[in-house]
Length: 123
Image 1 (tube, one colour):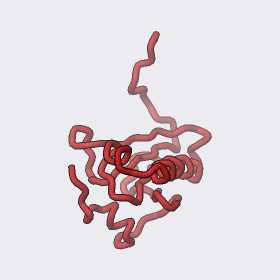
Image 2: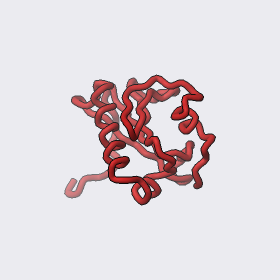
Image 3: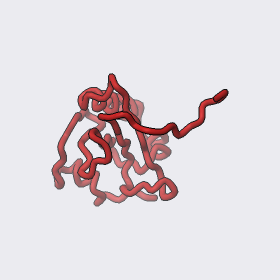
Image 4: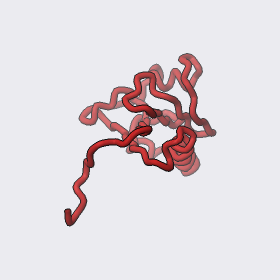
């Protein structure tokens, strides 16, 4: 998947489409999803042109990577889910149903999240 400079997140970063901002730093922007699936559903995107975590981890500077990770934690705290718990999801590629070709992480929270996706060893 190649980067599309006309994708919705690129347009949000350029100010062409408004968003309900939660947090912003020099390297990332966090905002409320327009179709929330949970009481808290926030998207965190890097400001650089990265399609996936593979792209981001290979091409982004250490400062961009640190800023992105810091923004995820700051957004969770700003939304009030850091203490009670939240789930991070990043869909990468067609098999994972990534809809926008710009790296993004979903923060889900605000109520208990059912299910465990990974079986713990010994259980």
